[in-house]
Length: 113
Image (cartoon, rainbow, N blue to C red; front, side):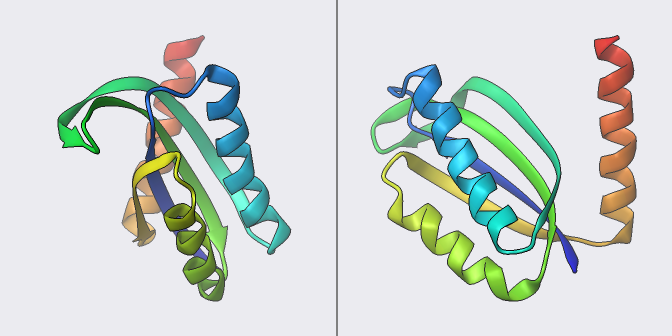
């Protein structure tokens, strides 16, 4: 199983409940197909660098997961079909990126405490 990281931006007109439902939809998609969610970060409502679909802000979410490569096509198709998603990007993490992500999560945990 490979390590992946997906960042997606949701429409800013959604309510907090709708954002949570959308994020859980994508988490459920992954877990139902044998993926393991390593980390999930809700970055909240952020201003965009440029307008997307005439919107100047969006709800950002980061998902880090381990999954077989064959589920990615269907996963990204779900993003394209969902009108609440404005943009998404999935990247494969190499061993250095995985180590960096772990250090980053540990740093965030110590800051939170």
